[in-house]
Amino acid sequence: MAAVTDLTRDLAAIPSHDDETDAGDFIEAWLREETDADVTRDGVGNVIARRNTNPDANESVALVGHHDVVPPDESQIANGEYVVEERDGRLYGRGAADMKGAVAAAMCAFRDTDPTVELVFASFVGEEIGGEGARHAIDEGFSPDYAIVGEGTTGYSAPGTTDVAVAHKGRRASTITAHGTAAHASEPEAGENAVYTACKAVEMVCEIDAPSTDVFGERVRGSVVVTEIEGGSAWNVIPESCSITVDERTIPGERAPLAAVEDSGRVEWTVDQDLPPMACDDEAFAEAVRAAAADAQEGEPELVTKPHATDAGWLAEAGVTCVICGPAEQGEAHTKDESVSLAVLDRCYETYRGAVESIGR
Image (cartoon, rainbow, N blue to C red; front, side):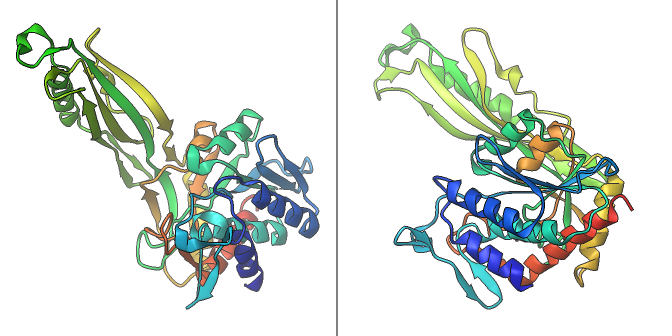
């Protein structure tokens, strides 16, 4: 569909890694010109639009994306502008896959769909830095009954197939800090070595069995990994402090018992970031989206899980029933060769339309 391709190209050309304002301006102006929706721009820059808001529409479905991107590679920017190229049926450029292509497909589907439910479009800011836009919108009352989040699900069950994710992991980043007493290294017994204490904490982390769970028959497994260790001030000083960074991939409903490493006065544990996991709580909704995805492609999509945290985690935590379905393929996002298939963009447009139109009928 030329409209989706053109819109993706226009969006992907707008720099939005430091400041999402211009991309938000473009989305807002397009929605006001192309639709009769109630379009709003909130205090942080989220663009939210609503159609079919009459009282008979007793359910609401949202098509959700984000228009911020990670910083571009040097090859993806020229004269302060993003470089966007089309070749071999793909569109190349920062944000093409993550996730301006999905936003464009959702915008066109939002315009073209004839819903019986209230239809919501939302493009958030700050997804790449912890979901700041989604969290603000939720705090301000954003709470559709259902949401299709357009993060990438292509190529999970089979190459080229666009699947429907019913769960994803979250991420809890934390720091374990061991405290000791400094002394000259020639008299180690005069101090307490914080590195040794930290190593005992690392052993405890290694012994933790990360939890796992099932979502509609799909297994989601968490993980707990020590990723950094830092301590000491000089080669001849017993270290009085040592810190350990832990990357934990969380699952819906359970967390690893990291607090067990704490030891009053000697070891403390602090959480630095906690991005929530997501699990769909309505199998009928997930199957409706999967059926729409099946109608839009030759392959047979499956219900799958994603390893990465998305804004769907914040929405699910707030009580929104979510699935994820989008054009980006595994390994495409955040790369210097980031690209998106134009054919899969059209597929996602058809999937979004089909899913929305099937709900409430």
